[in-house]
Length: 283
Ligand SMILES: [Zn+2]
Image (cartoon, rainbow, N blue to C red; front, top):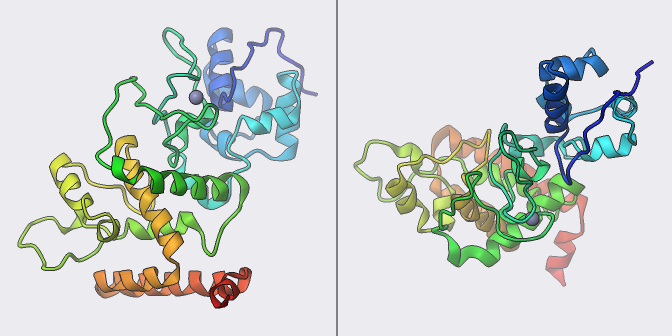
């Protein structure tokens, strides 16, 4: 039988489970994983606990912290669709200057600080900032309207399992696949050319100027100041519909193109089956 902790520290709004456990571990002077395993001996890591908790684990944690299991669940990413896990960063990517608690030393980590699709704070709605509080102006400000639409599309899918004619998370991955630019530049590194650059024309130049390569489809989290480009690209593809996915094939070659066609045709077929999008097109 799990006993509750003799001293419990209050959690802050939107705090992540691992952050709360780490603060208790510091208080009781034990390593964080020991703290977690005190309650869940089978736990693999703090990250794993943040990503997935069984009902039984929520109940046991709730007993230890003398709180509701549902509250434990809200401190994790357990509600996220599986495909959204790749959009959860391993560490703090951003902060809200309104909502992030000000602590000296180790500040609590908020759930929203790891969400790789957010450009605005889910609590108060303002623009997010870099973790050090410094602002890097986004070179993609002119896409802000589309980026906010893209943020909402990803948020609906990740947090609530709502998709439109296809999965916005899948679109994000597709847009980070490599493309072959025309004319083929005599240059060196072709890996910086991604499909997203076929939709957001300023992207290639900005990536080259920043000398910062974009992430791969496996971990589609862009730095905050670049993120609007991907979000806007997702919103544009979502709005334009399947024909845009087919148009993008023209930018690919070889095995990559084959993989892209297979994936997109599957997405388009599933979209037709799973909702009435095709009927809407006929009206
Ligand atoms: Zn906020």
